[in-house]
Length: 79
Image 1 (cartoon, helix red, strand yellow):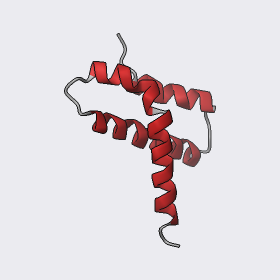
Image 2: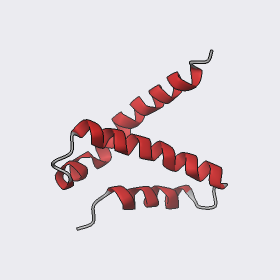
Image 3: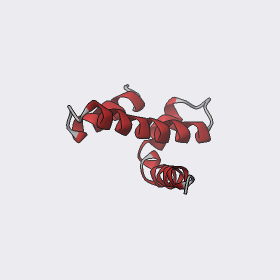
Image 4: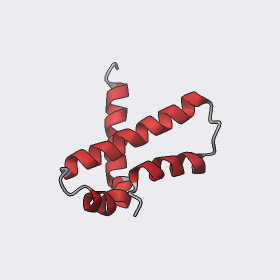
């Protein structure tokens, strides 16, 4: 079915919303009090998906630990 990629992406996004976003939520909400939670959630999920896409297309020149650290370094505010 032509809907397969979209339903798979939707399911993946839902999983990421429930697993990845909660790990960053408190810090992001505290650092960006003026932004809606739904936007922060979308930002975390879409950036995670795009980061993985970039890594896979790049040929995995970096370890997954390095890529996760790149992602976290950009999203977690530095004090």
